[in-house]
Image: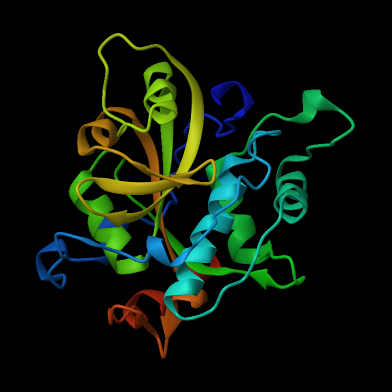
Length: 251
């Protein structure tokens, strides 16, 4: 299986203008975070969405996140390889006729595109995010809290070779000493069960907290209209105090 899978997240990039969740949310005053949560089971098929042929993991993740957000509110948009790869091309300049142009995606570029343009579904509708907040990489407490509050978190991972062996054998991702890091990958964290749960390569994958602390080099929470009803998430969290910040929305 692993020989047919691609990666595609470019190296982490930090910008002093990044809006940080720690500046907008008082972690001490958040609603209680349940031990287990998530809407991941509402999706019957996530789909590979091109990530077995090109390095579009950041855009495949965007579609997976949108599927989960929408399903939690009773809507079920569909995404196909063709739409996801077209957004990948729009952001990165990937040309299907030139394999050398398949160079992966910068997460900052992807977030700006998702806010300004939105990703395309199979019906020709675009799904935008209203805002996004960067998290401290590897801060498991913040990452799990943001997954609960916003329905998903995009994780950038320095992907170790051992994780592919674990994926192939259906094991949770956990650190393996000495494993070589050969690629960058993007996954969508969508639930917390026995371990945190992400979506990648069309499947649900458990990912241990130790793995996140060790290999996460970027993390971002997004506010999506697909996940909101009357300004609140489907779990009842009021995000109005975040989205009303004009500077955040203009970023």
